[in-house]
Length: 131
Image 1 (cartoon, rainbow, N blue to C red):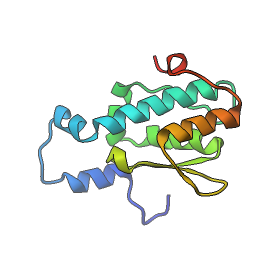
Image 2 (cartoon, rainbow, N blue to C red; image 1 turned 135 degrees about the vertical axis):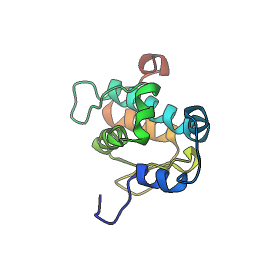
Image 3 (cartoon, rainbow, N blue to C red; image 1 turned 60 degrees about the horizontal axis):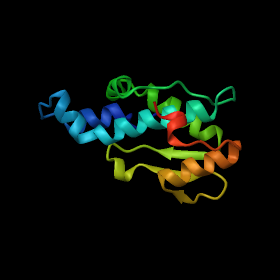
C-alpha cells in the first residue's frame, strides 16, 4: 500500500466519524461484505489446501474485527492473487470487484470462483467449502 493511500479502517472511521453506530447497524451497512469476505476465505482455504497462497478460514464473527484490523482482507487478497485474480475491496458489496491479472477483465464473484477452480484444476460444490 502506498504511503498516501488510506486503509479501509481509516475510510470507515472518516465516513462514520460523526455517527454513533451499534454493531447491528454496522452489520446492516456492511454485513454482505463481511459474509462475502468470510465465504471467500473459506472457498480459498479449501481450494488452495496444501498450495502456496492458502489463507486461513475466517468466520463471519472473526471478520467483524476486520473493520478495526484489515489483516483478513490482506490475507484473502494474497490468496486471490496467488491464482491470478486481483480483488478490489469496497465496503459496498456491490462495488467490490474481481479482475483477471492476465487480461484485466472484470469478473463477477461467481466467475472469479469458477476461474480459480479452473486454474487450480479442482472443482468443488459450495457444500465442500462452505461450512
